[in-house]
Image 1 (cartoon, rainbow, N blue to C red):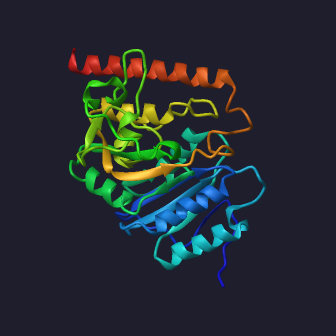
Image 2: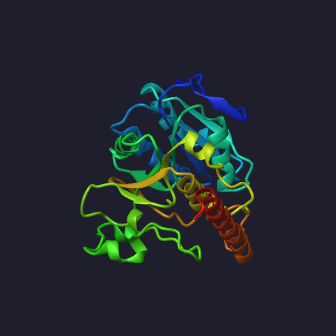
Image 3: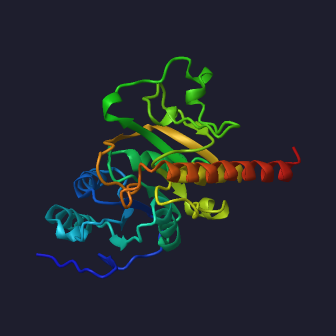
Length: 291
């Protein structure tokens, strides 16, 4: 019925440099979760998107060895969505994001964890929100945990640090605005984002890109990248109208590399790099504005 090949980089058709959103998914040993995510992408109300999958799997199989993945990729082709799979080098999530930022010829990039499921209007809402202001570098969405899908922001959330979306002086961060249902549909502006979000390629490049010196766990990579954009003058926002669900699947995942995800020294290594980076960014900001 259809033919899919197996070089290190392959595409359904030739990629074009246009204005589409490029969705990209770093994935590792989670074909079932990836299939659910692709299904949710197929039902997006915003139709103008392509897909890049960065595959770090260790099973020895390629994604098209799984019949259900192969059928879903075929459906993507039939509905006009370009797709490609790039085989990663098992260096962690930050390296996958660096690959995506380097090879994708598109201004709007949507990075997604491989164990998410999106409501149908996620991409549409994110695109509309990022276009409100050309200085918006990234927009995150509400990512609900399965055990907490009806949890709402408290009435006085503005007075609670857990929901301020800031990077504290000691490096502490909060992601409450991305993990609770909001009481209104207004954009909330923050200093950093976590997990998955839409961003402008030009903003991430102008701000220094994703960190390249983290361990294979890649702890804090999204915090560093979005905080770099924030300190470079870009607006960072959370759109409460865009909602996804996070399975937090207990096996595989792009951060689970070579069985080392629970080695404390890797987390400590990355945390120290993160703390050094936020201090560097603050010093540069103070020098620039002579605070």
